[in-house]
Image (cartoon, rainbow, N blue to C red; front, side):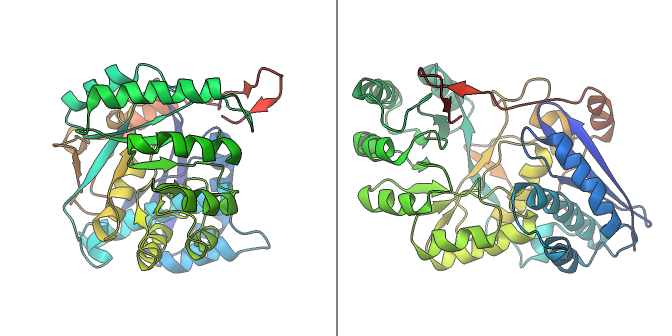
Length: 382
């Protein structure tokens, strides 16, 4: 079997799907967007064709190493997101070729379903109590949200008090029946992160994500030692080599690598298993499309330390397209008592609605992250 073509689809709201075709008619689907840079990723996949056309799609590890080690430059968000898209598609092909779900090819499942949380609020947190209550009705028992808007490297206690008040009101309204994950989104610097973690500890969040930007691993080490809240890092790290210092320095007790940005299923499994040796939990990042989620669920099925899965059903980014718009009716993702079932069909286990993809690819998207500024005019972390 040989790869004959690679085709990309830029589709709303902000995703890019990749289709890998073979000479035996088996098609694999991957997802390889870098949010806000879809056109760049489409060009990167075009470049990778030179290394992939005519090769055996079943030699997944050899392909991974070839794409990673070719030339002088390794790692980074663009290359690793492109490798992710190809890797996911090749695992999809192999599963279909052998008529097995991907998890069966990687040792078999340790679970049949995984707990899932839903995003609420928007870029700036608002309407949290109403949103949480709506999620409870839909069967969720965990949510995640941004806890603040712009914060200067050292900011006022008036802002800190406002953040604490809003989150205290939320905890009071929902009690202990809903687990709350606080996302600092890298928009908080270490001086304020230390203050916030202290002030928010009594609210007992299930974890705090990106307490500081991912480049500040040493700061994460200091923060981890100063709080009992589980700290999470990983969505902006792009290979096992980026995670090395996280594990060795004990910078976090939860990691959330993104299957679409970290090198695909192959690299996610390596990182997840490595994390287990450090007693670090795995909570895959996935505010993306259905192919990305299906890939995450295959990882969740086999990594013992996976405990919760992000997904993007109804997230505020999803304008013009949502998760289930791109899959056939028998493959729609549905929460059942707070859990997502692991798809058990061949490959990724889902059936893609190619007609919907073709139609919405004509619409496309030009999603860009917003530009934020502080009151003094300087650029703020989004």
